[in-house]
Image 1 (tube, rainbow, N blue to C red):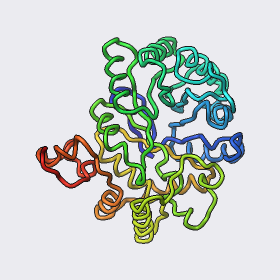
Image 2 (tube, rainbow, N blue to C red):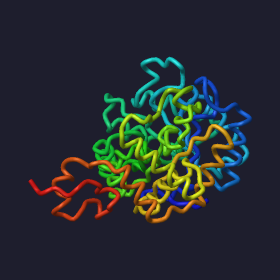
Image 3 (cartoon, helix red, strand yellow):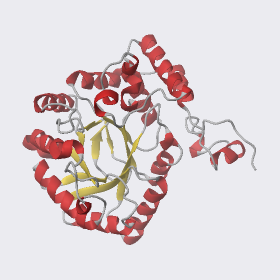
Length: 351
């Protein structure tokens, strides 16, 4: 497995995959039992993976507890990321959710206990809460960095305008910098191409990309009726709800047959190729529930799409970027440095 720094604003060295630990535990009623979760972790580490991504809300805290057990004998080797905002209890109270300084500090203290560690390498603000001023969030994160309880701070699932404002304020106030973003990204969810990924590139942010398989849709298993997120978790899923999604899946299946790979490996290989073409670090977060699923992800490390296959996937999954890009693409010859994978709509005349 190759390594990169997490963006250009840190020296944090991470593996090209992050292991998402949402399936570590069964408190949600779906996931991996402890023995299987440990096998997943050990196989990932053996393959060279060092970047682990969990959250206090995952499996109502069980994910953090298991992750802490697994890394206990070699804590410093791993880059440990966790999140706060949603709370760890099945029915959290008003004061134990959101992004206030009160909940931030309490959540981090609780996460440190569950993880069995003195510090968190990367703390994500899991979601914007639409209430807490960004200044309060940034000041709280700066305090946590100053005390050594976290090393880096980043924003997950925040819109681009909030992230860019946060980056600017932190820089102007000399607070701990915003290190990166986390966002959903796959062949069936390329909305981040509109604003978030160009912003990350421009500001030097790392980008962790969750659900690279579209909640399992891109494995093709739902066409066979196989159980997965769609049937047992019912969250973070995509279905063939549009003609484009059907066309994307058809293309993934066709290229899998051509290359002798699995559909999942094709889908992840496309994300890895996008990362290789990017000027900032794009890290897919893989979330296997079994060692077999993890081995499929690891197999994608050896898959190289041909230029023609990559183009087919990029074109069938492309989204119109909308205003103001549609009005300027024709006259400026494309945006985001002329990247053809991002300027995917026909050129329109300038209004």
